[in-house]
Amino acid sequence: MNFKRILTVFVLCATVISFAACTTQTETTETEPVTDTETEAAATETETETETETETETEPVDTTPETVYAGMDSGIVRDGTPKKYFCLCFDDATQQDLKIIETCKKYNYYDVTFFISTGLYGVDWSSAVGVPHVRFTKKEVESGIYDGFDLAVHTLNHLPLDQYQNNVKKVANEIEKDAKNIYKLTGIYPVVMAWPGGDPNVTRELMKIAYENTSIRLGRGTKSTHNFKLPTEFLWLEPTAEISEATLFSDFQKFLDAECTEDMLFFCWGHGYELDIYHSYDKLDKFIKMVTEAEGIELVTVSEFYQLFKDEIPAVILDEQ
Ligand SMILES: [Zn+2]
Image (cartoon, rainbow, N blue to C red):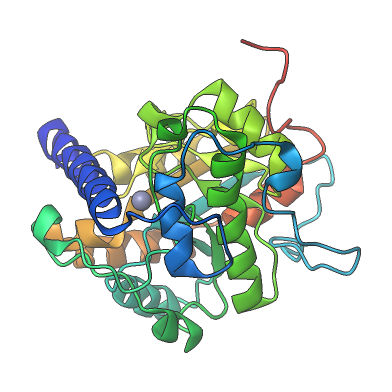
């Protein structure tokens, strides 16, 4: 894998996003207010700007003191000893996740996060991507495909949030409706998300809107850092590496070899459909084998990582511009 191929993935992502935006615009011409049904939720894209927008109109965060939040049960104790943490996650909930899950189960590895857009069940973007890109249907997800894994927010309709021009209601609903759908599905309230469309579509204003109006406290970006530093703001977490990068194994070996004088993080992300693009299922198997056999690292879901560090790392630094 070289830089050009990675670039191809991001170009494909952009293509998919454009396609999604296009599809939504052509298929949704109503101006209905937001409702709880998924089909009507997609119509929020065409709501007029004359609508009254106040914070009280956003989808309420639907939790109680008894609500179970994701990532609370890592079993890891922060005892002052520096540790190496490892996260792995995949976006979009396409059918390739079945193969990923099969591989994870082969190594009894469940500390993996899957980011899902619950407004796009069953949607097929294959023609835009060039390889199969078919999202699971609601029925398929309800059948328990992701049981035992961490299911988290990728927003309801996967549209770049900057296109809402900081409309608090629309941005918050895209995030919180997805969170509520996942909660209804799993009984566990999500606390983390992957920003749809990646870094170019994330702004500090969006981070602030997410923080002030939703239950989500961590947002993952897409630019590899190739370092092992913890994020300084959870709503702007840049990953260490992407699953298809040529440097994946060497980066991971560096992580294993590094002296651990402070807490460290190796954060790997990707998409299932990339495995079809690059014919890299064997590479995934090899990587997961290496990860699960490694000594001296803590395997955590993205939600668990958030819960372990939530008292030290702010979701967003509100004063910073
Ligand atoms: Zn995505």
